[in-house]
Amino acid sequence: MTSDVLRVLAAALLSGACLMGCKDSVNDGVGASSGNGGSGASSSGGGEDGTGGSGGHNGGGGGNDDSGEDGTGGCGEGSGGGCIDPSDGPCAVRDVEGTIPGVKISIESSRCNYRQGEPAEFIYTVTTDSSVPPIDVAASTGCGRCVEPTSDPLSLVSYKISGLSWGADPQPQLYCLCDVGCCAPDEAVTVQVDATTATQTIRWSGRQWTGPSDTSNPEGAPFAPGSYEVEVTFDGKEQGVVTAKLGIEIYP
Image 1 (cartoon, rainbow, N blue to C red):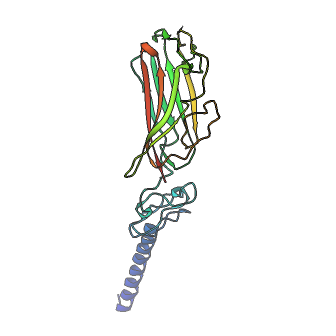
Image 2 (image 1 turned 90 degrees about the vertical axis):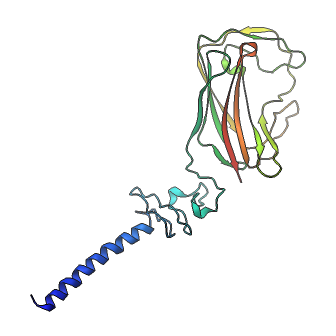
Image 3 (image 1 turned 135 degrees about the vertical axis):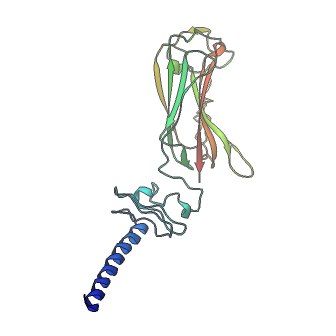
């Protein structure tokens, strides 16, 4: 074989190797399909489903699936920290028991991280069985609860969202229906709750509030950034209590 032929074959082999290497280096920096991953040196490529790659130390986030609800980038290293990852999945506490037998409480939400002033919904479920004892509700002095105790377990449930803001001077924040005005005094009654599963939704505006009172009190300022708890309580009076708590965080 002549030297000219050998030179041609060697050039062809080198060209093919370069093409393969170039293709791999492109895929390392850009998400597959329409993902358009980050341009940082340590970015990883997107998957075949079109999701973007993760941002490198200097690169931006991936494609639409990595962006926030308002179109901002995700929470990769290039985001500067302190942001909410909109892909944060559902969170819940389930089947919490207390000192009264036969009662369990669960709380769930679509996610546990929210922006300041963002509305949120929390679904709580109260499960009762036949082992729940009769509950003695004492007569009140002065204003009553404004909710008549019945066989519906939800008639014995209250909730609140509370905690402390972050920072050098933490401040208490509270949302509840603590003050609904003055109703007629409660009469003494004994209640046997049904064996059932009852569900209710807390639709929270993200703001502070203690209830309407008798004067239609408006809601206050949004919760400041901080760590808080959604707390649901079944009050079985002298027969016992169950309290479930779901932790959430509010970011700027």
